[in-house]
Length: 360
Image (cartoon, rainbow, N blue to C red; front, side):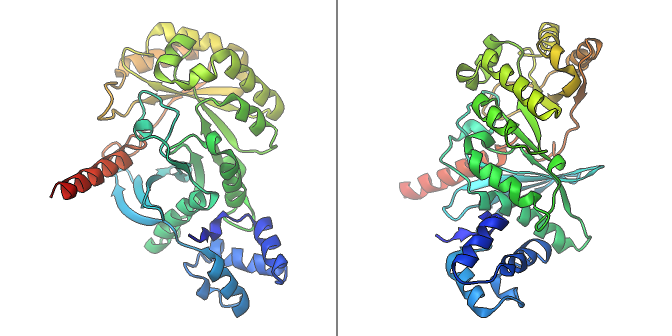
């Protein structure tokens, strides 16, 4: 299969074209057509010479994702299910906030992190997405906005969809460089957030990248016993390995970090955990805040959302101990809200069809 043109950074495309005898300015022309004019075929690039167009058509494709399902929520959230060239499916979500339009992208087909409450891990990772496939999620959402003709633009990106971004580190970093480039979508680094479940080695590496991108850590428990029970990644990176990596990131970047904490009824939502979390983060208060997340139940898991009183009590305890925190605003609760749930349902449906067909 030909690779996605969206997977080439500007410098990579410039070098690739020059190595094949084309002028340096051709890369600027191609990127302008892709990201500013947002064409869907190389033939529309009418100021690029025919030899270059032919070369591009022989080696790249613009569209590799096919929209399978589009779910729209009453609050304006849109969830897309895209089919990849190899037949795998992934999810991408557009969310509307007062500050702009944010897209949550997927980085892997499935997930091996295995958080016990998460829909994304119901189907194990089969492969990493290429940087082009990640970029194309943004472009497909932008094309859908363009088709409405209202002038809306994607302004923010969260890398929090299916998969662990730091388990697909190089492609995730290329994706960030592409969407952040002033020659492309020019989405500011401070409007991009990457979430990790806690791969400490990659957190050190990310700190050294000298990016202005935001980092979020999926913490979800304040002690090793509980965190290991609900997040098996804690066996590889327990808190005594993870928190020094966070300290290094804070010292190196001086950038605030978000600690994601999903509220699971009678699991991690007691006052005991609230006090332990406040203690764990007390020396990081100046550069961190906690995002308390009401849980979206998943059909295949038994976890339930914490009661409102428990969430508010947890919040109050953190605030009283000087920890900055918010209770996350919910989006898309009237559609398959939990990340990975739409994909999981669709894959199961296809398997049932194949089984029924084979039985005949």
